[in-house]
Length: 386
Image (cartoon, rainbow, N blue to C red):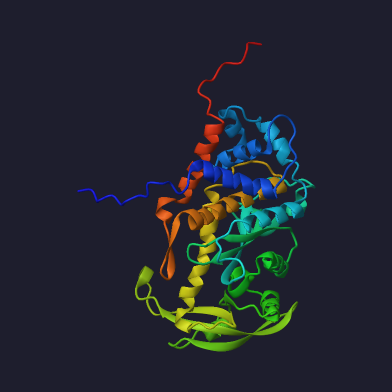
C-alpha cells in the first residue's frame, strides 16, 4: 500500500530558470571576463555550468550544445585567468555573496582543512610555483593544494573562503590567509576544528597568540614516553604537556585525555584513548569526540564539490583553481537557495525542505535551463569528403 502523498503548495517556490539566472548573476558580478566575438559572457558561463552539472568536459559540452562557442573559444577566454591572487579574491567574494542571513556578523564553529588534488607528469616552469609537495598519495607526491574554511552550522554548512597553497607556504601562513578572508563577513570564531596535519608547535603557538579557541587531535608518539605516557588510567582527564622541537623551541599545551572502551567493536576490547589539544574550549571531556566529529562536515563538502566539478586535463593552475572554486560556489548557492526559497519559519527554528531540493536536483535545474536556451544536437553528419 503506497503512502499518502504530502500536500504541495500550488505556487512554485523555485524554477530552473530562476536557479540559472541567480547563478549567472553571481558569476557575472564577481568574475567579469572580457569576451571576444559574437558570444556573451553569460553564454560562456552557461556552457561551464552545464559542464559542471554533469561533471563533464568543456570539449564534450560544446560538442553537444547548439549555438554555443567552440571548445577552443571557451578555453581561450579561460586562459585570460592569469592572476591567481586576483582570481582568488574574486572567487572568495562570490562565495561570500550568497549566504544565509545568520552567517554574517555572528559567532560560528569553523573548520579548516587542506584538499589535495593529485598532479601527474613533469611540471613546466610556469606550473612549478603552484604545485604543492606532500606525502605520497594516489601514486604521486605532487598536488594542487587548496585550503578551505567551512562553517559548522545546521542547514548552513557553507565554504567561506578558498586559498590555493603554493609550495613552501607554511601552515601558519595558510591559516592566517584563510582567517583574514573572513574579515568582510565580520565572523567571530566560537571554536576552530583542525585535523592532525596541523599538530605542530608553530600552528598552536600562533593560535594561542591570536586567542583563537581550537580543538586539535594530538598524535600519540613514543613507546613509553611522549604523549603515549598520558594514555593511562580509566578516567578522562586534562593534563599540561610540553612539546619540544629543535627548530621551534618548546610549547606547553593543555591535552585532554579521553578514555573510551572498544566494547567489542571491530573485535577489539579494553580501553581506547583519544588525545586532543584544547585551548579556551568549554566542553565536557567525554563529549569532545562527539564535538570533534562535527569537523568531518568539511570532508563532506569535498565530496559534494566533486559532484559539480568540471572534468579537465589542463595543467593550468588558474583554470584548475577556477573549476574547484566554481564547484564550491555551486554548493554554497544550493544551500542559499534552500534557505531563502525552500524553507519556512517555525516557532524557535526554521524548517528547511532539503529532501525536496537535493544538490542533484539543483544541478539538473541548471542543466535543463541551459539546454532550453542552447538545445542539444539531434543529428550528426559526416564531414565533407577530402
